[in-house]
Image (tube, rainbow over all chains, first blue to last red; front, top):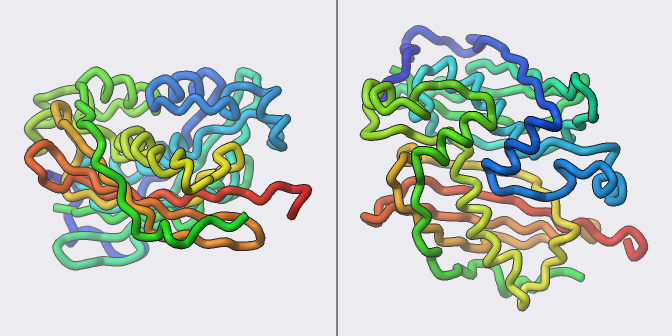
Length: 142
Length: 151
């Protein structure tokens, strides 16, 4: 387990490089297949509207998977993540066009813990709305 | 209808082992658009100190959520799954999931709450490898929304 970032090189408030992740209907079909979550709210517009959603929405777990990339890309070793949790506050609505939606993720070091671990707080938004709440990861640095 | 509180603390039998395949990890990494070589290149994973390619942090959810099906579909619990949304998700890792792992999940109902007609169910999934070593714990909060008409 070899993170690229040294514990001593970060302070509380250190910002991680922000990233933007595109998501289209095609993305959701692929994710459904890879994850085994075939809930029709993620690919069937008619069904999604019938259950009261504005349109097809991304899997919450897809958004969660994208958000942690800000941490894993920064740390270098995805195996350095020791804790990761989120609250699904708002759905990422994915329209049926070539644009789809964007998930914008930023993160910063919120606490320095023992054993070379730091807590990173993540912010994830789509269409100007916060889509994850309490999004936190603990990662062990070098 | 509020769920039966006597289910709190109940554990379900460990699942049959799920064998984590290298190509399944690759498929998952491609689906999330993540080209980190630790997911697909054994040498790159080894350079980081792992014995084989590792899975992205959220990969294990597919396994723990399937295991949570034992709880969700327990007819005695009586959860209306058509009204369920995923509220929170958390993982605590002892080590990353890796190719070749044979993982078994033990699901436990941690809490049941009723709030404004919604049933809120917290399920903890303990994931162990074939040697019995702990790999990751997954906490899943499911919210069964109250039917609109009766709320």
